[in-house]
Image (cartoon, rainbow, N blue to C red; front, side):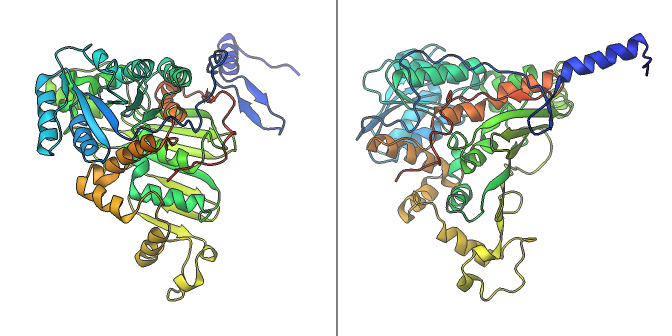
Length: 469
């Protein structure tokens, strides 16, 4: 049998073959060759920092770098935690530093050392001997370098999201944390939202069964906020890059529920995006800028598959006129949890206490539990780290409904008691890696991209996530 192909058709066939390089695995399934990523060799004598514990610090002395949109709130929250001293404040702008010191004064706290005036002054802060924790709240591009230097200068570090934007930055933070044996935590506040924490505890108690699929997102129209970013750094990043540039709010909570690097790991991702319409239109209408080279699409959708064969859907959209949405959905073998746009649970009724459901007829997994049952469940499965006193203070101090305060409280509590942190440097790496890897997928026709094992072989060493009380 002969197959006739003209030159153009044959070139097309060869191109497709080379682009996708199909393989058959041991199950007889067709697999597409993935774009490989590099895992750097771990230096001799260096070991992982899973469940890292350090010497207790009864009074945690904090230096805060970056006092703009998020930093001044951090000053207020940290100053209201027992056993914390805010000892240094740093920002390019003098007014921001002065205003933050006034916050301390208003709270009856001693004034902090002031650093301002240029974009390298922060290096003096990380070198201060009287600092235990450096708290970084600057623009994205400076997060990793500040975190690395802080650890090299002997400090623990907490870094706002995203903590790293490139694979080199991610590996730099991991290697420095492993070398220095210092904590490196990303300040992902959404894992401390009351619904997410409660649902995590339900998962850990088996109420939802095994989680086989999860969804998360950052859908938040930023038109009212674009002009608040110093030197327009956030818009510039979206102009220059494609992909999910802000994945951690959606990805972090679902990765915790799925025990990523604690019994499962992220294996590969595939990303697709729409064309760029909303942000270029905003620039044209509001600033008179013709952004023809705008890189990032309005909506980016990414699918991740794990080693166990579970899946995660992550979306990013900061331009469309849509209600705020982090999605947060968990699909389990025995139940379903959903936060946006409707907060609720659908459960196999066999998993519920008969006394709890005796006054409810026709309960079905096709609809959410009635509100009274949901409220009973949420109280029953309140996460052990949240007692009445902490919950009341979190509501009073605030920060996204209190979750920011709980995040800071837990960080300080663990440092004071010499405990491992709720989030480690490998969480940081896994949740941030979508930034460079989705761009890599998109720039290669939505090709599958391998996600490295950032623990370098230790992803199954732990069997579950623990928040130690």
